[in-house]
Amino acid sequence: MMGYDEPSSKRSTNIEGATRVAVRRRSTWPVRAILLIGALAAGGYFASQFDSDDPMGALIAVVSDPMKAIDSAISSFTGDTQKAGGRGAGRGGGIAPPVHVATATARDVPVTVHTIGTVLANSVVTVKSQIDGPLLSADFKEGQMVKEGDLLFKIDPAPFEAALRQSEAQKARDEAQHASAQADADRAVMLADRGIVSAQQRDQLVASAKALAATIEADEAAVDRAKLNLGYTIIRSPINGKTGAYIVYPGNQVHANDAAGLVTITQIQPVKITFNLPQGDLPQLQDRMGENQLVAQVTARSDVQGTTAQVVDKRDMDIPVKVDFIGNIVDARTGTIELRATFANPDQRLVPGELVDVTVKLETLNQVTVVPREAINIGQNGEYVFVIDAAKKAEMRPVKVLFQDQSIAALGSGVKPDETVIIDGQLRVSPGATVNVVGQPNPAASPAAQATETPQTRS
Image (cartoon, rainbow, N blue to C red):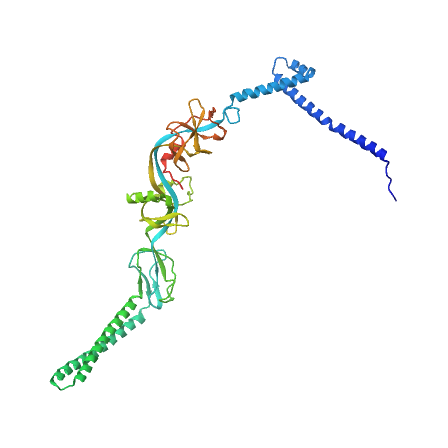
């Protein structure tokens, strides 16, 4: 069934009417916005006049002449903003921004580098058997400190004692034969001089005697070898050090070609500390090495603070160790060079393979201006600080930083000792602005002064 098509005349009329309704509805929004702004302005005006002597008169003024009330509210708001702007000293206007400050000081600053080192054993020996045989006993305990020459293991000596006796018997037999052959050779020489024995017989007897003499020398070597093998049944420590765990336990058969060995002995008195520093520090390191003043402060790394409330002072754990080796090549992969220091390790506090903190002093900056590191800012033209004058106005000064670490910065220019610098709140400060100093600077309590108690390092 075909649908009904409304006449075009009616459709046009309906569309035109709907359009007028939509326009009428849209036109009410500007009116509503204006009324809302007027109400807010009237309310602000009434609020500003509420503390006056005639609040009822202010209400009547709003009702009788709303446009005048709006103008008065806007003027009041603009005036208050201008007053606040006149008092402002920050980057966005407003009240003077609060800042924390510190006092610059002058002192000597040691320039040091900080890195992580590794403890190395002075010597590591794997004890091995040089003969085959059953292991009879181990005469030490695992982890025991031993000295050079101390008895470690015993191997069954019976086969080697028998071999020694056999070699000695062989030597005795050959010595007897050599004595008889030498006597025959001596007689043959005498008889040959008289023409009784031919020269050929004489030469044969002399050669036989010499051959037996050489046999005796071989027998002597065999005896020495048998004695040496017998001595190998007793295994002694080749160095002073600390033994490790048993690799082979008594009762097992040992062989001369066992790669693992019997036990490992590590020399931990003294030990070496190896560490790497950037190649840029090499000239200063070589200068101090030439002056015999290259010393590393070694600190054992420990996260244990104890079960009590007492905190371990890391400075009590510092160990001064003299650096006695600078590598002869720079590692192309890391751009660093190896250094080593030897430590006597009398109380065995350092163990091979342990990681330690290493601090090496490169030089000392004499009487330089020191400020807390927080005072240093970085801008488009480089590093700068904000200095507070007597009128509490901030002055931005470019500085030259000679050295800085986690707590302080040593300056070559820009700030003088006893001047006050901002260490917190710089983001809200603009050059020449007045600031609100939160607390007065105290040189004795400033971070720069506190940093004098500990050596300064850079990583």
